[in-house]
Image 1 (cartoon, rainbow, N blue to C red):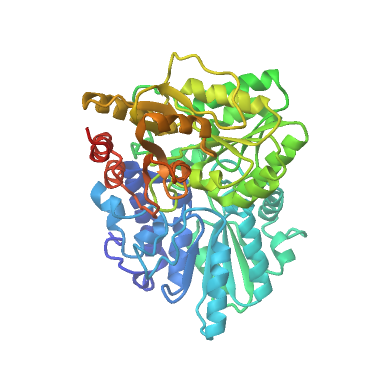
Image 2 (image 1 turned 90 degrees about the horizontal axis):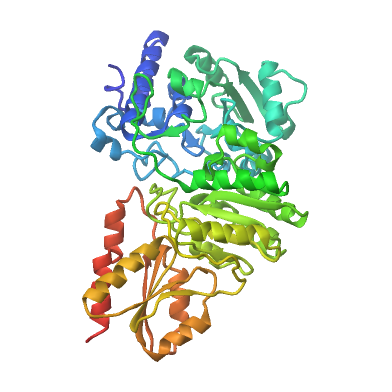
Length: 587
């Protein structure tokens, strides 16, 4: 086996084409071995195997710099840069290797921590400028998928690369797919370039001022080598456009590209996955609800930005929704601003976005949406510590971020019924933008009667009246609050339990009522506590006799964390919270 002996790309240099094709087969098998046992990004990595081998054969990393976009295609690169054990070994070996480009893991070959999209060209222009100032001569190669070109930062990077005017190579990996299908006008030109073998009259890249080369056979190592050799050491901004097949070499991933973009472990023989008991998900419940409501209200619009699965909108459901679903590709800024415009125009948009990706559009939420008070709805998915855990994808910061923006109501339902009550109200109202933090601790039902109307001013819900200690537990941590109250009861403390519902402002009336017979208020939130919900309550009580214990996750960049350990380290296990309460409240 070749790849077991490859410790650096230099080990490829002496191989002939026949041997390089064997390396490709082994690399593809290694990728499939990893993702079938560990899970991860399947299709994009399989489609970029040959290109990665050709790039490392022609260029001289680490002197030449590779910058991967979103890292969905970096697995073959890792195999060829001394990390094959993370693809050939057992699951523990695999756990040691990140699914994303990571200089913490390989400072020699990985130049940036990258997990969000449309960034590679902009990052590469910084290396380009540094090289030019220092007077060195290394190649700078940005690798970007066609789906990532829909993001605004990719446009900005192209603009600057052209302006700098010196050597940079931008490899556009065109597999005709984003996570789902591509959306945006640029893809009309990419299709025209593919169909004309790169020779159509209108060339988007040439219009930017780039030298341009096209290769239809993007999974042919020999032709890729020739192509990359032709641009090596260029002194001009150059786009190399290669047409690859997403999922190449693995039939299930080729036949169903969207489903095989990313996935949990599977049988590598036939692609089958273990089946377990069916469970309810908010994605499924929300998309079913939206489709039913769309039939009654033609102004209701489901909005997604490159991740329709976040809203449960499968290809079949997208087809059923028709014009009432819109996806603008990986472009969260566009999604937010367009939702604001749609609301202004009399539509009722609901934009569904993962917590980690809403960070990409802070300014549009503040400026385009909230200053204009347009009643769009933002459906925030997977917020909290129990969802994604890679350093580039942690979902802990949406509460501090969104609650810092004036004019936005941020609601935190605790059950399925409360979520849909809030959603119905948010869609029907016409006063303000509303964000809803969808519970991330599973679908929990209640028989409790739900309110039909909510308020633009915060009104907490006192679920249980007690004394001495009050537990204010938000959203996905509400059930944790219930558990803590029960444990405190066993310790002789009849605690108050409050569902705050509103994350963006404090309910002064409810908080003031606690002053009469409470010594301690405990806040619990499933996210970063620095600048979060609990600190706002602590600030409110600042000059009073009430003590506040703020429970949340300390601000940090955590990578591939264990949830139980993270909770323990932050004193958020139920028993730890009780211990801390008892240490403060004596007798």
